[in-house]
Length: 440
Ligand code: GCU
Image (cartoon, rainbow, N blue to C red; front, side, top):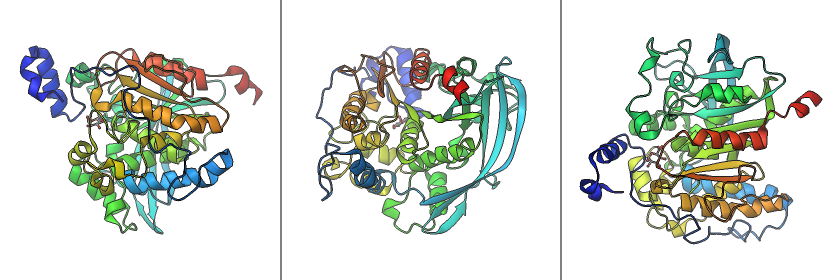
């Protein structure tokens, strides 16, 4: 963090830094990330003896014993426990614009009611005004031939900013107000992805505003998290918002997987920063998710907890006490005592493809720690007969690799270079595949 150095910065940079701090998003820094691994390897090694259980050498051992043990450790020490079960009901669905986004897409709206079940006790989610469930908007390429891949998104912005169309429920009459200060600081695509380009490339987009269900605020967020997990007695291991938002990605899948218009082998979660963390959790805990794009997910996401650069466990758990379990906060300053680390989270996604997005000056998100976590997860891709990461340097971009590590110059945000990289990755792994689709 540079606060001590602000006085040496040119005024516009200082203003941007101040805004970044005020909005609670990332810290501006003058440091650069090393482009070769510059710290300890991820520990403990993912296939070694763990918690009294012997080392793992086969895929069967991994699936039957190690993966469940790591899921448990990550819930116990980092995210808190997710519900043991859920129910999902579509209350209504309708097309709100049959020719949206320059005629390239069909835009729909779903109202979805879900319950979280902890220790047999089911509690239904509610919106801010007490209404049941939440809204999901879906944009599907117009005249799509056959089932299409779908990118599930959670963003910082209301749904009408993510899929800007006046027909989206709740959209203000004046959609033009977008493109303000936040896009100046965090990039043109921080709220709104290049929707037309994505549709044109053959991908559907489904989006919810996670704060509609679990508010991204300390008090209100904790209140909802407690209400939904009434059956879970232990406060230390109660779920936080990152786990809950990850679980909401799965509730989106509950709806998408029943729809033959979507390719059930090409459901990808996408998220930036805090929602990069939730996108990873979703994939690690839900095998129906076929891939992940986690951009600048940082602490509690892709980057390692032990001896880390950038945001510490202490800092994230005191600034955002509603994001993780209390147990995680208890490890602040004694991360060595944890039995798990974030490479375990990544390893649970194997053998599915993931893109880890980074920026060189976004040292707060610790790109080098994410790279070392990717190396730490790699042996599990080997168990499946594949290769995870296929680059020795952070900037040797390999979009077709199963762990594709992307780093660009610049800072925290979603900028113009990012989406072409995301689409390259999507095309390499989930591209429209016309022959396969025709053969079905
Ligand atoms: C803050 C927080 C990060 C988070 C980021 C974001 O910077 O410290 O952990 O990833 O906000 O969500 O933009």
